[in-house]
Image (tube, rainbow, N blue to C red; front, side):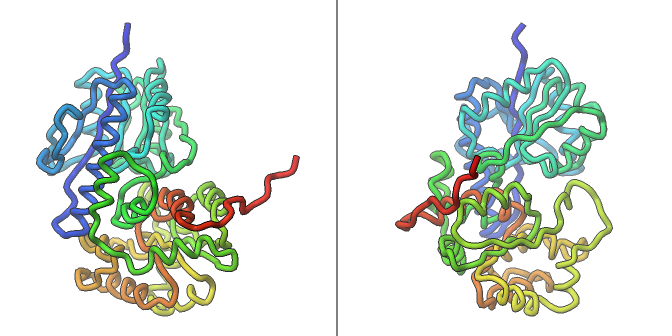
Length: 373
């Protein structure tokens, strides 16, 4: 008997600011590209969970809308209920903005995994899930599930469900979470038709991104990566760029597992001020890619998406939160180029940056010797 496998995408409006609308448009462009790839890979059922279908234009023939209520919405409950209502034997889940760079060849093993006979999960990132494949989901999702998708792997593992991770590549790690992600994507040769059109229409400008990319090709320079950086991503990035790299790694798993520990960098910024932080950073490197959320993400100072995205675009006048505003002002005054964003700026964006930095530059790509064996 043929097993019933479906893809379920979640997408929600983000805000009213120009920056928030940009991310929302980018996520849905990614969703349209993904839906086409899913159907080309053989999936006949592609569902979109959203509170407002109006925020998902040009979707005819691509997805089946499932309206969700924004009040009391819990990701895990909705996903489990849909799998039960549809009587699915396997499910591919995608958060908005994730999976848009996947190709048909990447989708095929996800479908094959989802068709398995035992409950198990395959996640793009066990520590912070953006998309996954789950076999026998009615059994796998019977456990207590999280309100958001990031800690899904932890919840399933704690329930005894075998969990596996996909190889870290630009296709599996790139996620449109902030404006910075789209700006980096726009400088690459990646993306399907809708994402390319979206990137071509971006009006926002970044004061530092192009110089930060150029520095990646300079053998005499140093780039520092700050935030929730995976050692695997750092290792790959370092082999693809010419400059030296250093890292300040903090906050990994901050959205997946609660902790009362306060990141060291957050303490430093709060106690000494953002100007001191950037002055010290400038003495140690030539450019920095900063996941600002572990530094600024304390509950008492976590502003809405409109303000977080304004920080990523250095739109200081649109930031009311005093900590985020002062940090962004200090970054703008920094003597070195700084790229601000969320987790993706030290994850999927780095894979893209390591490619995009070489566009138009006649520099040998063979920067590191092969391992001797």
